[in-house]
Structures are given as C-alpha cells and as structure tokens.
View 1 (tube, rainbow over the protein chains, first blue to last red):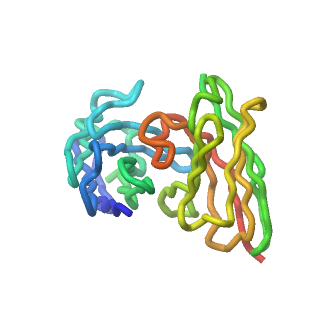
View 2: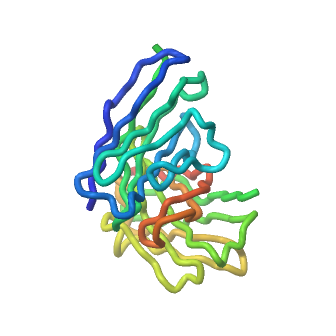
Length: 108
Length: 122
C-alpha cells in the first residue's frame, strides 16, 4: 500500500497570500495518478486536481498542481476567503487507493 | 446534474448490521463504476469498496473484506453497502462516489454524495 504524507499539517495564512502544499508518496505513483481535494466542515470532498496537474471542471486557475513520481505539490496562487479548508491528496495508481492525512489551511 | 444521495446510516451495536443505500441520478448509472468511501470523525478519507458498472466485479479494502458487501441495482440506479459484524472502528461518515478516473479497484471520484453517518456503539 502506498502511504501518502502531507506537509505541513496546518498552515496559518492570510487572504491574498500564496501557498504550497506538499504530498510525498512512499513509492512512485503509477501514471502520476495523484488527485487533490478540498473539504470544508460538514461537506463532501471537492475534486480540485487530477493526474497531478489537471484542474477539474470549474476549478479556478489560482489552483495548480505539479510533481511526478513521489513528490507532488498543490499551489494556490492568491488565497481567497473561501479557500480556507482541509486539503487531501489521493493516489489512485495502485491498489488500494490511498489518501494523505490532510493539510488544514486556516486564517491567520 | 449528477446527484448521489446516501441513506441508511444510524446507530448500531457492535456485531450488528446495517445496509446503506445511494440513489444516483444525472448520469448513466449502469455505465459507471461507483464506490464507497468513509471518514471517521475528525480523521481522513478511506476507500472502502468499489463495484464495476455492470456489477460483475467488486473490490474491498482489507479492513472490511469478509464483513461488508457492495452491490448495485442498475434498474433502480441504486448502490448498496451491506455492513455486517460492525465494529467501533467502522464509525464514520460513509460517502458514495462516482468514478471519474483511475481504476474500478482504485477509483478517483469526480462526484460525491453528502454522506451518511454510521455510529457503532453499545
């Protein structure tokens, strides 16, 4: 099973700032099948990025994904108030599909 | 518009059983693999089980294999999860999700339901 480790655990930032979230895999993710989700309290996860760098339908271009192999990054270029949430990465290149433990993005 | 609506959650004692349902609409249900995921209170996400569009192939996480059964009724556009021999560690919000990419056994959802809470406690 591929273990995904997200860092940092918590980020305290202000609207307008730029941020980078990291997701590191214990082994190479096949086909770079790495997705990023945003989750707000009481809501289901929302797909942001798939295939490491492809924005999902309707996702603003301030969200971007990069990386390959074992190291992946989600960048939010300019934080909006609605971006403060928990972010998860998921690998779906190997069985079973697994998730990172999440990064909480909170308002400073 | 794709919609997934879970039901059937509730409080059950350890060793008991529950059956979750997920009513799907807005897409061709029989052509799409679907899965169950769960999220324990305050914790991260976990894939639980998946099923192919026709229902002839099913897949399970090791943590539920032999206790949970995923099935679907394509005539009713409904996904099910039969949960037997429930344990305290099965307490979670259970989400159904439509596969948007990946594999039936390692899906990447593109749509999620809002979830149903299962609590296993005496």
